[in-house]
Amino acid sequence: MSLISSDADGIERMRAAAREAQQHPARSLPGYFYRSAVVYEEELSRIIYRSWLCAGHLSQIPNVGDFFQYEVDEDAFIVTRAEDGSVHALVNSCRHRGARVCEEAAGNRSSFVCPYHGWTYALDGSLRGARHMDRQAAFCASDAGLRHLRVIVRHGLIFVNADPQAADFSAVLDQIDSALAPYELAHAKIAHRELYRVEANWKLALENYLECYHCATSHRSYALSHSIKDISTRIAPLRAALWERAARLTGVDGVTSTSDFCYDQETAFGSSVWNNRYALFEGYQTASRDGRAVAPLMGQFRGYDGGAGDFQIGPLAFMLNYPDHCVLYRFTPRGLRSTDMEVLWFVRADAEEGRDYDRAALTWLWDTTTREDEYIISRNSAGVNSRFYEPGPLQPDFEYIEIRFIRWYLGILAGNTANSSS
Ligand code: FES
Ligand SMILES: [Fe+2]
Image (cartoon, rainbow, N blue to C red; front, top):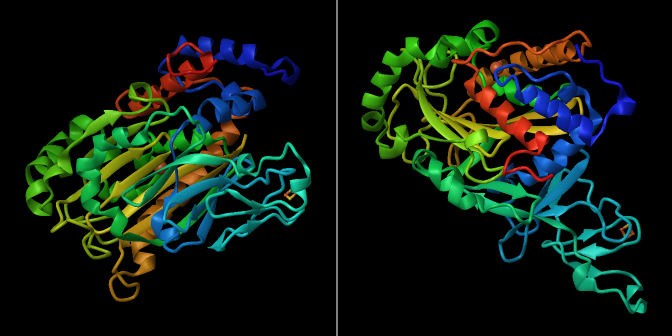
């Protein structure tokens, strides 16, 4: 049992704890990593802000001047559409004395005017005006634009990275493209989005997503339709049958292509990608209560194969894509013990609510499942925050991705991997 004394905490303590935990590679993380403010701050600078994060979708900013805010921890970024159509992710902190320059969650503006002393910024973040600052000889307006993150757009999805040295995500995204592109997400719209804030450390929320060991016990509805609640040897025949029919029934050649470049096998830091397709149980075309379609077919899909496309796109974002709708799942740290789990449901852009889909039917399974997750994650948080919690053994068939996540994570904090910055 390790008791954390807050005044003994620091970088050296964190490194030592990470190295110690590395000696037990198939165990859950020690409580220290969920409880230490030092660890959390280091995670933000070493992991979160060096990773490719999914900020949103182009359909949120279709017109010049449209913007929305993306919040991570205590930071806010304004994602804008500028006059030339380009997308920018601006740090919402004035270059004068740091005030927020925008309070609305989303909207349309021609510029951002800081409410404090009136400095004005263009949609691309450049400084347009700073009252009376021309009297300061040393002041250089071109150096005083809002700070910005790097941006990459793929299939309408907007990815950002705070690290100017981060490797180009585009090349990595090519690895999952043959399976992801046919959904034509650039021509999709967000039918519904829901924010679930869970009072737990971000790793607990993420780790819960990385394994389906809990699906049979915690997700009754999901387990009725999705085969990965069972151990892989048991569902191998279902998978083989899916592989045989998937391309033929969907009309999509690359639908069964797979890739695995996540966490300890990522090709560039903060750019984890992974994809697979798994079988739904017989009678299920899609993720719905009765198994029947809940929206028109997406993109290039011409039919149902009884399968679901499972994607990881960056270390904290995932998609579960069915022939008729796609579900994006992302995790965002909002504090040491607070995490936003956000779910976005996509349908094709020309689908009309009420005519082509019913919102309640569309969102039923993943809303139900996420509320169940919210509960078990909060219970997990309460348990690991007990001073009497000790790491336990992971189940290698079901929890292998979690084992790999922990290996990746501890390597970064221990400062002993090529990817970590010390
Ligand atoms: S803090 Fe923005 S203008 Fe002064
Ligand atoms: Fe779950």
